[in-house]
Length: 204
Image 1 (spheres, helix red, strand yellow):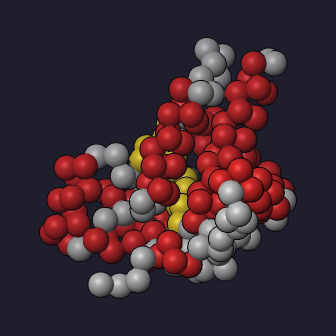
Image 2 (cartoon, rainbow, N blue to C red):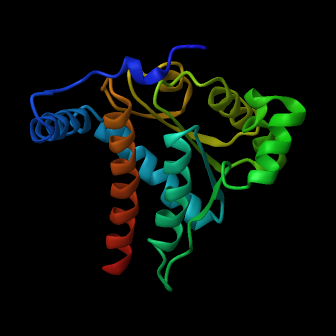
């Protein structure tokens, strides 16, 4: 059996659970401080333009990143809804279990997202790809397929950034070596974008 990726995790102060919490929280703050705010602004502009233009935003990931992808669709669509503004048309490529498993069974797990990009993606749509390592083959295949279809791509990555850090048109890379920290930071970025858009809409 291959090594569980959790063994790559940086660990923190294990003298007590309280100490672990404190050091974990400190590391999360440090990780968020590594995010390129210029890239964050670019991602925001892509998302807002997609809403205005009626384009679709597709999101994907594996494991914890899949959960973030699903959560993102709730917060970016329902959480930003305003009667005077167009809705964000978000779709998670992990949410349809029947389609997801059929593609994995028939074409292979590495094609589970790129095939959906080929089914649904159109020029001007957005693909938001989430991979803690930045090297998940099925995520990278989806980014390649999205570029072929002239979609815009945003990548959320961590650890060393992997290929996603360089292949996504806009990279929101979190410099951290712990899956929990990276996923929490990605979740935070997702919430920040949603709440920022919602607050701007509520003021108009």
